[in-house]
Amino acid sequence: MRIIGAGTRDDIVYVERHTFWTVPNLITVCRFLLVPAFVALVATEHPIWAFWVLAVLFSTDWVDGYVARRFNQISSVGKWLDPLADRLALIIVAATYVLFHIAPAWFVWAILVPDLALAVNAALLFHGSPELPVSTLGKIRTAVLMIAAPVLLLAQAHFSWARQLDAVCTVLLALGSVLHIAASVLYLIQAQRKAAAQREARRRRAA
Image (cartoon, one colour):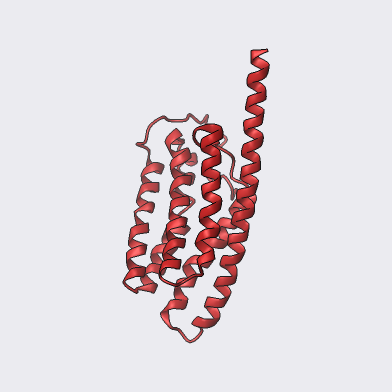
């Protein structure tokens, strides 16, 4: 059973579409619309509802990619829209946690600074997305954060075991943040190598 690249089929020839109007892209947009709902629920002190919204948002992260591969609806828009929506969602979630004192301030900085560094690097080297494959380290990072972040909300509901849950989830957030920084460094190195290879290829064609 495939985990990374779920939905990939060997019986079709994939054709990249150059349009926004695909089912996976619409799923991405609908998922992202859960983000403002999550922020509103946290702001109005409804942690349990916010937990469920965030759990749905994070647990359906694979759906758009699966549909794109399963039904041959891969698009050039989806290649940058899906990761962009995921990155923005995570940054907004982290900022919301810090703003409402659910997580320490280092959480948002650990997410925001590496993402900004990658965005600037991509803009300078590729004038857009470098279209790098998702690394295993990136997948593990995402899994840790997507478990820790929603469950941390349950610690705000004043259960008898909320204090212990808060401590465990904070440790998991720290682990996820470290993995996020490590994955970002790896992507930065891969982008630099890809840009160098492209420059070398252009040099050889010009020679």
